[in-house]
Length: 112
Image 1 (cartoon, rainbow, N blue to C red):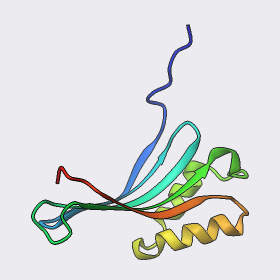
Image 2: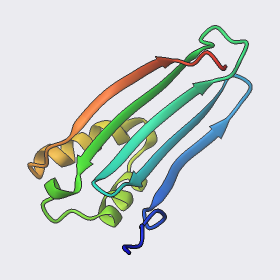
Image 3: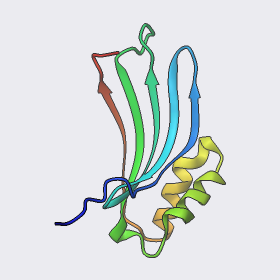
């Protein structure tokens, strides 16, 4: 029987803030096949943007990393100003000819 590797993947929060309006967090994480960086805004119930959550993300398949490691990405992101992090990361990936998926994702959450 083969053992499942469910918990061997890393997750690092680069930013976390909660206020009366929303929860904000930026996260770098890895899955079996990808390294994912995302910036989240989760509005709290009762505000004008209630019911909407936002995620701006960049996903890179591990097979496309061309030698770039999770730790190198983490250090690069930590050394970038929060407001510039997403664009600087995209520029790094383009410079190193690394394919990636990026988008701004918005969805309705009726539970909020």
